Length: 352
Length: 99
Image (cartoon, rainbow over all chains, first blue to last red):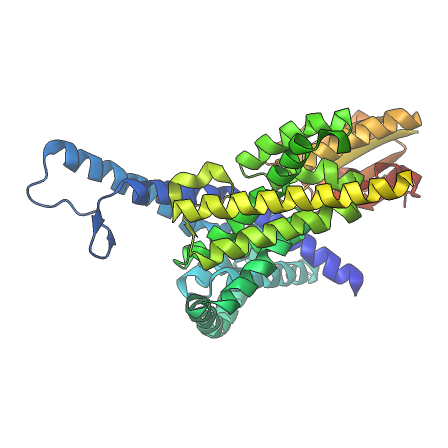
């Protein structure tokens, strides 16, 4: 059973690894286009109005084009996710059913969860068809004809039935998230922050990250805002900790503090790993505390992030920029002070 | 011993390469030879050749995802671990028994 779960986790993460560049590319291009577009009464306005001069017309045309490219990348995200989950399980023959399943998940509104399900199902179905005994004459056309057609029919039919219930669920979750204010928003922020810092770029971190990123596609930017703030505080905080109390840290750690800080600036949580690897029980609780603080603050102040990435580097595509910086700063300071406190306490104990 | 290794993590920008570096460093400390192929966001780098594979005693597979071209390693003893272990405690990987 444990091995079964382990394997499936690997399949899912394989799909995620292929989908991440699509999310990043799509998210950033869309955010860029929206960021520079003129604001109409109901959000960014990409129509060319009468009375625009030539320069304005060109600007809108270019922005609209960028928006379309970004949207194309986003539209491919779910098919790629499901397709490569299936690919990880069943190899090349799995691609077709996975891609189609992911596409149908997108079309039916079943979204991220639907795509995960479609990918896993497609992989199993294809692996099962592969095992069927077939005549020697049929063998060559199995991978290019029989398997794709048969497996697509199966997945397509399944998605027909499960698509709309999942879509309903996603919509319900979306409504629930939108309605979340006050204490429940803080709670979600705390959970996401803890997950982000817990394994610094590992599977738990990716689960929280992907949740935020998939919410972007649903038009909710606040989850990603909280995630983005939490992403950068572990490396920023560890860096800061080495700057403010040098004597607590070895020469080597002080050097990696600088690297860690700069990785934090560009939103790479992994920067904190060298510290966490050396003293996991001291470092991980402290960076979790900092990330939880940062994402809870971001939640409270309705920070939105249009790009599936974190750290100060995405500032251009943030809503409520001041609050975002505030959230990061507080989270960073909390991380640094708590780890230095823990370290000085344990060091004074050792010297006794 | 002669090791070969493949590292791969979901994002493929940090853990993959840090794990590879750690494995190389630790192998050297323990007096083993090792060649590490990385399967990160850039795809396969430092690819293991057929000679590398046939000449090796064991494969260390430090991956959170399904690796590409895994069928190359069908006939070699393997030590399979999560990427995290190569970051936290690489020595323990070399102490494991290949199977």
